[in-house]
Image: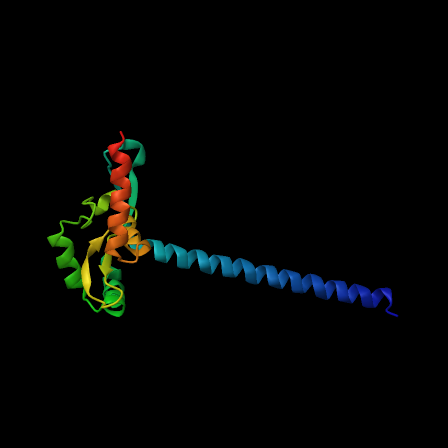
Length: 157
């Protein structure tokens, strides 16, 4: 059986351990906050006016410092350079190849669309159009059926 003095030592040891742990957690939070601030500085945030004023969007544009990261990412995923991406962007005037909306109307930048079977790069698409093709698994007959379905119900109006 432990004496009161031994229990007091144990409680003191536990208290010191908790204080040390709290100090470590405070330091971790401080470091994470610093890292988050550094990450945030990688982006230039700008307000973009939208025809719909209550939906003004904030867009994060890549800053020059992160161009090399984007280049590496494009090379790994699609085998294209940042210059190729920028050329595609200029040719499309910064607009989605399907819906035609400009990138400024979206929260995310245009994505590189590619054929998953062959890896062939097609165009730049907005997230919605890109995901739509993905959900239809690039199957043109399914897309045609969806088009027929929509047209069927649009004719009734």
